[in-house]
Image 1: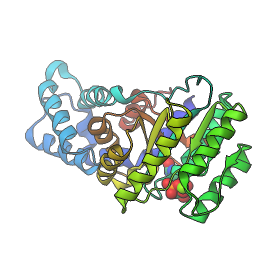
Image 2: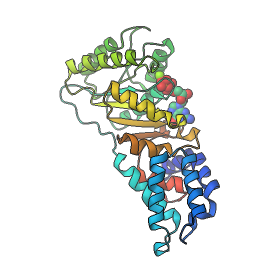
Image 3: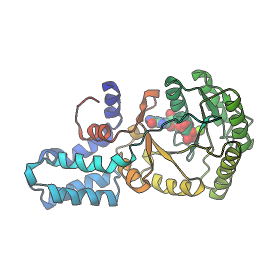
Image 4: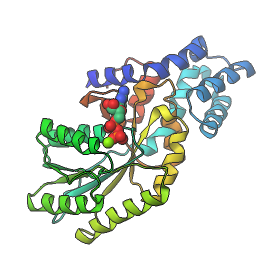
Length: 307
Ligand SMILES: Nc1nc2c(ncn2[C@@H]2O[C@H](COP(=O)(O)OP(=O)(O)O)[C@@H](O)[C@H]2O)c(=O)[nH]1
Ligand SMILES: [Mg+2]
């Protein structure tokens, strides 16, 4: 497990370095925190894209606790950060579906990492003993269908696809029937994320959901929104729009390795209040990690404790 923690540490190194460059020795400070130190802390948190509301709450807690019992600032931060993230630490559990596969509908704008996350998740569920199938529901771009097919081949996971331009709802309908017929445990459906036509997106996702519900009233069991951490606060805006088109049940935050603004995790946790199923900290399969509040905060604040 410690190598997973190492990958997490490496993955969020840019955010950690940002915090440490700004805060430096302040983190170890045990004295009451003065106004200029509070200002430095505020700047560092905002710089990391933690967001105004979360930053204000953390600052209030620091003001309240700092100097008491000579607790170092880093410990106050750790406690506050874990408090902030614990509610969204809710792993994706594949309940044994009755009479059909457990359906995961994956949504998000283009380029956020939907297809690669599907591949990583498929591999992970397969390793856990589940029989997995993919549905190539992003029929908007030819390359999208191909990309999923290539992953399917590599992982020996069957992919149900139709041609480019096919009706995504029809692809998902076929895929559900195939998964049920072949006794698959999990069906993961890719979708197109054309956010600039919100009405179109809404009707497309709505149709997919209706088609699934006809086959199984409980499906989709999970509607997973993929967000790209490098998009910062824009990711929150995307989440609001997607939540209006399809009620979300979970979030994956990708590309934390590509940004110094990993504080977005706190903004996502507190603003969306949706289970944060996984975080992406790199391009390798192991870099899709189940989200754990304490491991994330330890990796961020520099503890070398192995998990
Ligand atoms: N560095 C990094 N790259 C990622 C991560 N997740 C996805 N990507 C990359 O993001 C790019 C877009 O991914 P893709 O799955 O095609 O996005 P989609 O359009 O939403 O399906 C690809 O180059 C992925 O390798 C991550 O956690 N870290
Ligand atoms: Mg894709």
